[in-house]
Image (tube, rainbow, N blue to C red):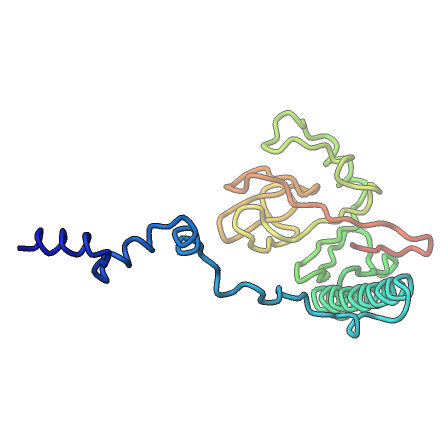
Length: 228
């Protein structure tokens, strides 16, 4: 039936509407126009970079650099002053107080010490023995065989002047204070544990391992002794 209708329409010169549309759509001009794509954003303005010219400094760059150098130098000077003050305050707090400095050196008048006598003074919280030795005591101290001593030391190495013997009055065993003019050797004796020292302060008997320590001291021209 459909074939018969198509033949009759063709013979009469009239085509159906669908056939005419198909014929028109297959023409080259319409095919090209229908395949062309245009962006909907065509013609839109491009992005613009903001203008920061009003925020820029009007002065030349050299003036800004000078100001920067000035600020850096000022801050550096202030920081250095603050660091100096902090260190100085720390050192002042850590340094010895006035009473400790006063005890750093002790001055003794040797003219007040008769020959053959002992004097005990306090230096840095420790007792110091000062002995004005007689010629017989000096001879006795020098007559000892140094090689036989527990802590070998000649008498001349322990004194600056033979008649003056200066020692710390602290036993080298456990820190007790020996007694003067006592013991088996006529020097000092520690009653706590039985250490005997001779007239030069050298250990001769008992548990003490070392001789009595000799502190730093010096003699002045006016007959005084400065310990420390």
